[in-house]
Amino acid sequence: MSTPAPRPPRVAKHLMTPGQPRVVRESMGVGKVQKWVLSTLAATTIMHLAGGLVLAAAFLDGAGKQVAMLGIATAFGVLAMAAALLIHQRSVLSPWLVLGLVPTLVGVYFIFVR
Image 1 (tube, rainbow, N blue to C red):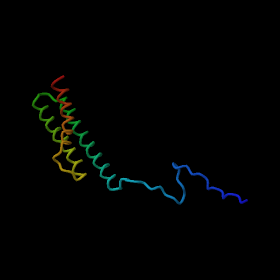
Image 2 (image 1 turned 90 degrees about the vertical axis):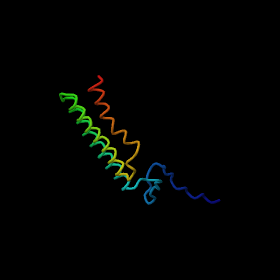
Image 3 (image 1 turned 60 degrees about the vertical axis):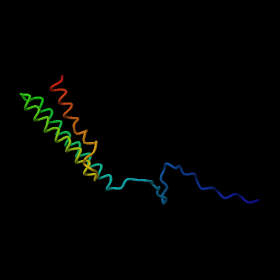
Image 4 (image 1 turned 90 degrees about the horizontal axis):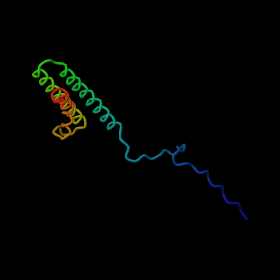
């Protein structure tokens, strides 16, 4: 009677096995990740500028000056979304541009409505 051959030790699937790299399906490439990081940074930075303009408008005297400052904030908000779309090489005319109006709408609520 022969002895059975010893089985190799069982390897947990969640651990790395030396010499056998894991095959990753559908991973994002470096270029795609760089686009997402750049567009996120650009959009959030410009949106913070728009928010600062809205905050500055709240401290101005005169409704005309406040409306002008809110108009500039609107332009910067829409520009932020357009920059993100351009980085991803998408059409600038998109429903995503409406998100650029958020800082201005919040400012209009707190300055004129409330």
